[in-house]
Amino acid sequence: MREKKYGRSTNKDHIRKIKPDRPARVPKRVSQNDEGLTRLNKYIAASGICSRREADKLIEAGLVTVNGKVITELGTKINPGDDVRYNGERIKSEKPVYILLNKPKDYITTVKDRHAGRTVMSLIGNACSERVFPVGRLDKNTTGVLLLTNDGKLTKTLTHPSHNKKKIYHITLDKSLNGNDFKKILEGFELEDGFINADALSYTDANDKKKVGMEIHSGRNHIVRRMFENLGYKVKKLDRVYFAGLTKRGLQRGQWRFLTQKEIGMLKMGAFE
Image (cartoon, rainbow, N blue to C red; front, side, top):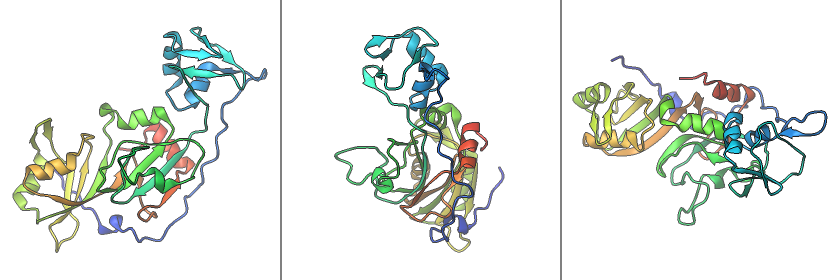
């Protein structure tokens, strides 16, 4: 198994903030035809709930109403201002929003939880009028790259178990990682929910073997912490520095920015490991 090196510069949060190479252009809400009408499936997809194909399935299943009437006919068009509902809840067509956050410690990755205390939503404040959601979860004590969006189709792609994508973490342990355990992590071992191994592992500081960098594709819950705990280590710090082709470079803890058009295109095309 090939070992990779992770330079310490990736984990520096004091790097000078840089501006995105090209700000994302604001998409139009939903295009309409010459009659001012909009296809129902397109309207639903633009709300971020699902794709157009999935919207067609919802329509055929009788789960969508327009102005109180159940619609099952594909190709139906609606007027601006029509009351469109899915499972009884009104939906609105919104422009897609993509926000990258460098999550700090002690914040919960949730939209709203009266028992949670501080949530990541409080960090982005009034960034947009649209309601965005975290893509996946980071533990309360885990820091680093977190994507927030109202793009339901993209969220499903990035979080579904069949779409495992590369993630890189910088980890600080309670004690030095010895050579035997280093090898075990690369070769793999059994956990309660199956076999697991890292794709790459490296000491990030030649003088401190408590600090390691790990590349892994698995999206299983708490997988990094569980791997080290299984070998008798406690993770003191866990920082995600890479997720779905995105890094936190230029963002200090707690800072956020909108994705560039180039980054949005990369995510939608899946042009990353």
